[in-house]
Length: 252
Image (cartoon, rainbow, N blue to C red):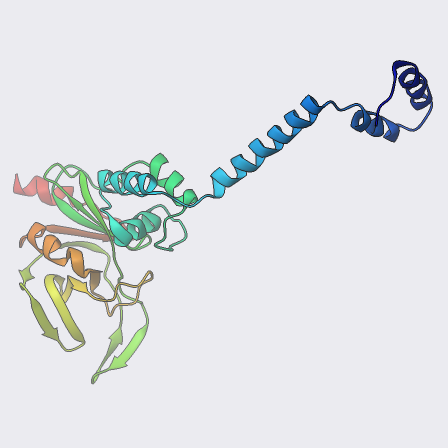
């Protein structure tokens, strides 16, 4: 459609007396090819932006996530991501997406609740275990499953599946598998009345054990090596934390 200058002027005077909606018609009528092209490009940019936010992760994204998880002490793979999600109070999926990637890249490394000396901490609320170095700095965070706090009756035994809170020490260890009345323990590190930190093929997202502290099989040997007899174990929830620094003071 073509409109000459005279007709265009008459048309504009007519529009000035009509409803505001007519302005939309005017804009559409007088769009030049360049205008149409600009609008098309703007729409394209909007679509591209939306696609970027929802696009699948690429290899570089995965490497960045694993590098940051390892740097913070979570390790790599699904267990590392689950430990991160547990510690940060996120939905536990074990799957990496753009939201999880953003959270990983913006998070800080976990800190020990009782720094200053070598020990291991078990946070029952978060369901994670934290290993520390000689200075008490966190070196590794693992997902765990602790006592379900339910009564059980199985294999001729009964009791409350409870993981005790407080200060303990590793008093005995067994390298390899150990058969207990309630099942097999992999590289157990005993800390209280037959309860141990040990590897298990099943480490649920929630507390499900008889009272022991289950760690992933892939981490069991490393945990065993880092917990010599005498290592302090702190087990706590929001209401029950007790420092063991006074123990260290007595030994020095």
